[in-house]
Image (cartoon, rainbow, N blue to C red):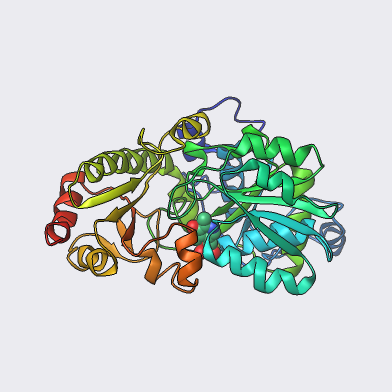
Length: 393
Ligand SMILES: *Cc1c(COP(=O)(O)O)cnc(C)c1O
């Protein structure tokens, strides 16, 4: 972003990456075209060989997608960004671009469910193996390293218990052995946390969540230095899980309000967490912004606020937790997160329902646990909605 020196995030969110056409449109254009024409046979040849820069085919690049990539790269402080069709395809692309048969991943044991499935059931078939270790214990990561370990993979705060992985400590351990570090930054977004500034090599996004922020489209991205993203791009242009122009256009508009939304949703979450912690029917609250969070001090060193995800245990088990969910009229009963509309989930019977009860208990996901992804509604209205069910306990 040589043309955007030192602009602050709110400026980058609305300005970075825009390329105007000859029509001088003020808002970013949506280029719904799968291929691009050339002025001559000679130009076509140069574009295909890479001798001349420019668009060829939308599996390789599209101007609307490029604008989204440049805007997100600017926000993450990344040299480059490549967009993908979803968060999962971003993870798949990042891993397959840099690892091969026989390579090994060390990953956090509290990753997004589909990421665990991807590593265990799909990447394992290619001969890439994964060892899952304690999210919060850097010594366990160091102990799991093998000669063939190529990647540390983490996301922080974790879902749903909001445990914090120490990004700087894990980067130091990995880099001492020449291992890459990829951070899924979906929960914090670059507004609250910039892993590349802390030494991480790649940042991965599910753009479906806060970057869109209004629950409309799927998308993903991999950000980092060009020498690493170039390999991801080579995978994408051949394998094909690229972002559609329409989704990129929606996401560009999403990024424009990212800072406002994430800060407001995080402030709402902080108020809701404090209210829940003082509630007589609540046994425990998990929120990095609360001083009672075991890693509150670490969280303060790497994220600007507690974020918009709050988990809490009601006094009781599944029946009491479901009672709270079923008495919500405002909160949406859905597993999505990062939306302007607040959502509520019972992890033990939904997102973590396929894990054995023993493994769930070991992970600290009890039957009384609920997760709220806080949106933009008035906190008082959210409290009244939750109070209806809590009062019945
Ligand atoms: C949703 C999510 C993903 C997967 O993203 P999709 O866009 O649904 O493919 C990956 N990581 C985290 C942390 C997520 O919340």
